[in-house]
Amino acid sequence: MNFDNDKKCFLRKIDKSKKGSVDKAIKPLVNKINSLKNYYTTSSCAGRVLLLIRRGKKKHETEWLFAKHGKVSFNELKKALRRLPKQDVWFKEEASIFHISCRTIDDAQKLVNLTRNIGFRRTGIQSIKRKIVVEIVSTENIETIAAKSGKIIVDDDYLKVLAEEANKKMKRNKEKIGFFYKGLSCL
Image (cartoon, rainbow, N blue to C red; front, side, top):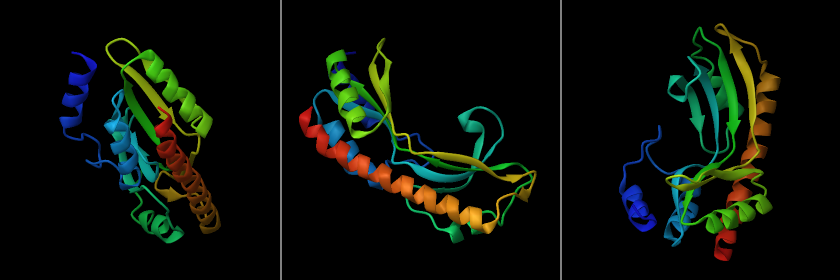
């Protein structure tokens, strides 16, 4: 397949993410990328705050107790921890991530340069065989255990700090998404 056909076919596919749709916070950015001649998104996430259980090492073996793609409150987290399972529960704040297919290596390099200059430090070309794919990841993240064997191990003060810090990182993440959108006019 050539790039244009591949793009057309891919953008017609059903969203297979857990959420089932593009995050509202990045929909304009994703639409803008997909409108460009030499690029299209293959996956994306605006960033999120999670409470989760890991049942194994693979992504599909993870159960979300709480997930939000925006600002969180202490009360939301506290409420989610009331239904505490017997397994360990992890608190995570994850940065935005994008996988973007590019027409050429030069297009990929332009995208890498643009996004690194914005502050997406974990950006690079991930594939060049069948498709040229750039992974763009920001560095804002937190990961810590919140409950062990069915018992909460973080007190309310620490949970409040986690919510505050996650919100700061989500705000910075949102700013970078805005810069990314504006920077696309240079591609």
